[in-house]
Length: 376
Image (cartoon, rainbow, N blue to C red; front, top):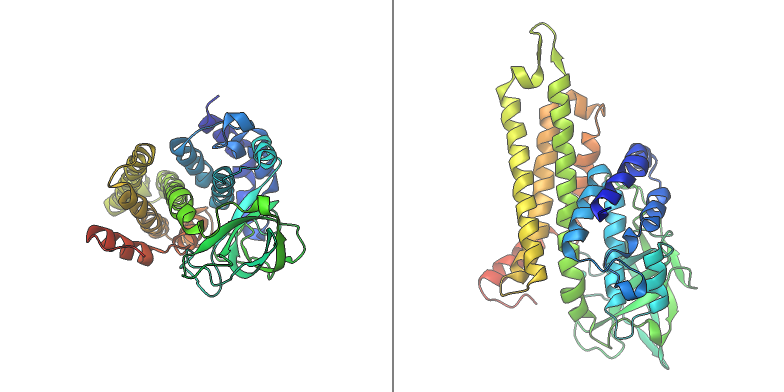
């Protein structure tokens, strides 16, 4: 069975039936995470030598879009886990035990990059590690950490103890149950309500030398080369899933809602609604094509790879907002009165678009890239 087929089965049996309840109550979808682990999908990118599937960007994007079509919160949990896993695997001395646990589906990880002081500029933390012999001690105010209180480990960044500039950072693997790690407030967001995203505080958290995931001061390089490509690809895949979900829900509504006095469905009676539906389909197909192109650039890097990486999240966020907004307008009262899942897709699309790097920041980067101006 392909990984997409496995994801589709988990969607049918576990994720889709509980998505609305998790969104309503703001509860974490533990059963979905467990099912993904049992299917081996939590180790999607982990090398076979550690028990993983050893797959690449295309499988990641396809699985993620499938999950997000049913529940974008599950998609976001999965995306952050895969990103954290990629950081662990890219370490100078990868932790085989943790990678093995990830491959078996018994270890959930996540990222903690953004900070209260640096906001959407996630690449420039304001916190600074303190050296303690061969260990490090971290004190930081992290703005949003997906799977807060649920993850087993957290890939965190701070400025290097000896760093001199705003990008001289280091990545660390933090035990989520370590002394000094705490959640500051529960998550009660407008969208992506079921991903347990919350601000967290690290207060003098001890990290052993073998849990430093980059060389001292080399965190920025890892963020650009390991995290950003997968994060932007994953964000676009989540947006694609939301766009497909909104389009399918709109098709269902236009086929089933009737003008009884005309004896026609809304879709049959109103060409304006058919035109809006067509726009939704076109935008989703355009995003899918951009994702396919982005995957090719990641698999075979070239001079345009970074530009494509930057475009992916910007286009994804805007597409999801446009498509879900059209779905709200096309389905009218049925969407606004929550008789469909469209308003959930709408809220989730807006929540995803404001995650750093935001569309505005990405547009600035894209403009700089086109003009051969250094990004940082």
